[in-house]
Figure (cartoon, one colour):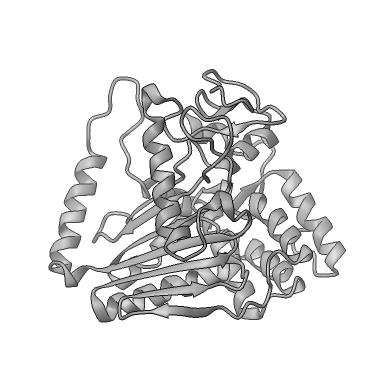
Length: 359
């Protein structure tokens, strides 16, 4: 199973209570110039990913790039983001190079408020920076009895189908919807064959990546399991034209259009480092009866979950179900981190002169 391959083996994992890691990450962000509120919000996004098993977008993989960006000035620790264009149900935000971990939730909250008033809210953000797991932002709508959607342009690592040069980003799309008794539906996936950070995790663990995940630097797909080479490109979702890479490539373009072009920033390959996002909220009772929707979601999700599995396969799941189960386990037992991650944070704490909470 792909996901189990990328998990830290329990034999070497260091289990850390989520409250301790959250406090550690908040300390780091404050030391790097973020406000109390932005540090807390940013830590929440990262630890949410770890608690739900989205380790590729948690504190282990993302923090080094955030630290580098905040120190170099490419990320503004104290942005004065502004609304540059607005209508009743829409808004465009200039993020002022702010960290998407804090500006993103603010933009999603604005979309939710607009949906509360208009039935739907749509907010695009330009001049931004990485916003963590797209699923976090989409899932914000669920507690408001709304369907949420989030997407972002970033990670210029994917060549077009038949191409040899990266021209589109990993460009994830996330959708979240509430149910009554079933775990909420939370879908979050890059339009590349695999999230770029999962390749970083594979390299750290020394395990091979799957067939069709990456390409040689001349664009030739690597269609067998292989250790991660020094240089590579990430393939579009579908890997090759014969098995549908034109679909993943085109969906990545959709994210560029609805985020980069709609915010006025332009295509990602023309704006390296200038990240754009799009957030949508749909107020369910503006479309249909809310309670009926939740009942229908339960029927839908339960029906999928109870589908008889094919011979030799694991039980059928849906997006968000396994993450909910992982969250329950990790809240109880702590989040499993690679020892190198713990060492990184302890050294960073010493360097920044903050408390070492992981000793």
